[in-house]
Image (cartoon, rainbow, N blue to C red; front, side):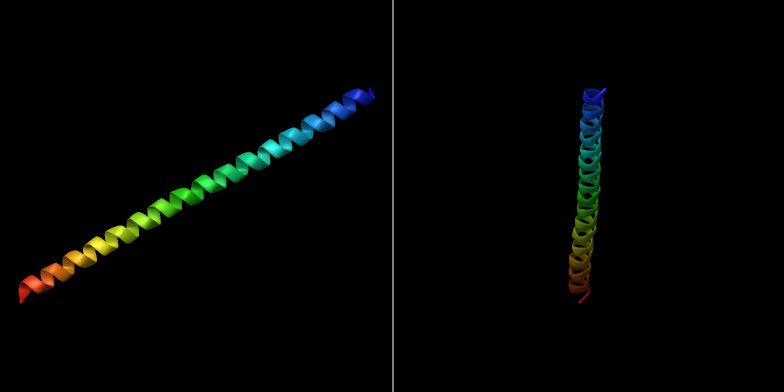
Length: 60
């Protein structure tokens, strides 16, 4: 009975640590997705801005 309780607790600890790791990985992946999204927005904004500057120069 004691061995069962010890193994049960160790299994429980393993599951908790795995859950923490999976949550951490999930958060890292989501953060990475947001980084990509915002960097693409920034790049698009810079492209649009540079294009508008070129258009303004051509108007003169």
